[in-house]
Length: 302
Image (cartoon, rainbow, N blue to C red):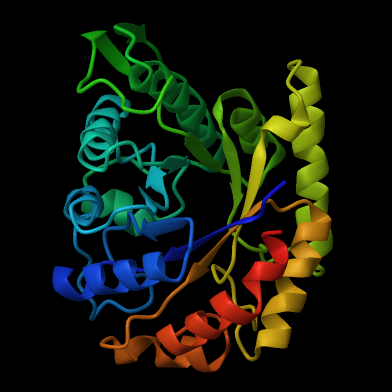
C-alpha cells in the first residue's frame, strides 16, 4: 500500500501567506494539505485563527492537485448539515479534492467561544457517533430526517452534489476504543492524534490502537485493510525533524506499527511564536520539509 503524506499549516497568517505555504507543499509532491479547524491557536493566543472552511474555499482556487481539508472539525461545533454543505461546496470548487475530517472535540475553550456545550467524554463520543452517521448520509446526497439525542433535522438534502463518488472521504479522529469503533463504521481513514499523556511508549500505543481498529472492523464485517490509518505527527511533543535520519526512523516505526498516512505540522516563517516548536523538531520549516520530501519520503512511496 502506498504511504501518503500530508502537511498541516494553521491559517493564523494572512491568506496570501497561507496560500503560498500550501502551494509550496503541493509543489513538493505532498498528497494532502490541511488547515486547522480551531477557534484559536491553543497555547498561542496572540495568533488570530482564520475560519477553516472559508480558507479552504480560497485554497481550492489556488491549487491544482493537492487534496484539501480541515484537521479536524468537532461534531460539537459543526452541525452535520452545515459541515456537509461547506465540504461539498469546496469539493465542487476543487474539482473533487476535499477530505472531511471529524472528531469529538477536545477544547472546552473552542466550544465556549462558539456558544456550544462541552460535554463529558462519553457525551462527546456519542455526539460524534450520531453526527458522523448523519454526515455520511448527507455527503452522499441522501435526503435525511433524523430525530436523535444530538442531531434533529427534517428533510435535509445539501448540495451541490459531490464530485467524488459516492462522497468525499471521511476521516475520523479517534484515540479510544469507542471512537475507533465509530471510525470503523463510517470512516475511510482513522486519524490518531499523536500519543496521549498515558502513552509511555507512543509507537506501542499506536500499534495497540491499530489492533483495536482491526477488531472493530472484523466485528462489523469490514475488511480491516479498507480502513486507512493516519498518524497526526507533531500533535504531541515528538522530535521528528531534528534530522532527515530522525524523520526517516520516525516514519519507519509508525509504518511498521500500521500507519498508511501521515500529516506533519509546518510552521509558517512569519509566525515567530512557533520557532520553539521548530527547534524541538515538532514542526518543520520550508527548508526542512523540502529536504524531507526529496531525501526521506520517496523510500516510503515505492
